[in-house]
Amino acid sequence: MGRLFLIREGFTAADDKLSARIYHRLEEGPIAGKGLTPEDLEHWLGVYYQRMGWDEGGRPTADSLNKLDLEYKI
Image (cartoon, rainbow, N blue to C red; front, side, top):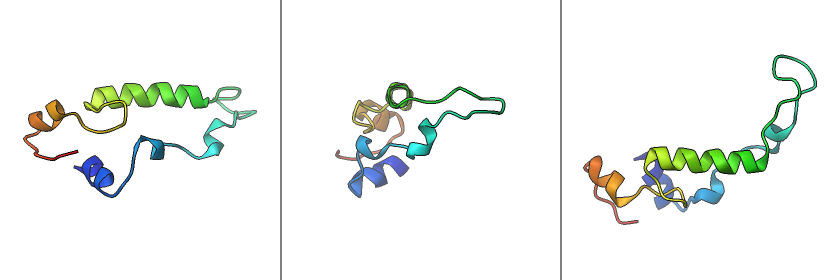
């Protein structure tokens, strides 16, 4: 229902982004040298959308809404 609210208010998959700081690789610590690329984020958002039962645009599919017994026109 949270996603449906965001869609109603005009949010799209383009709004599913993170701060540019997330792409900065740390120089020390347990994750030194590791980082996320914009391509990684795009890939994992696609995986997340699929697991949530959403389409490529981040909108819940009709099948997902039916399984939750929700009626909503997207």
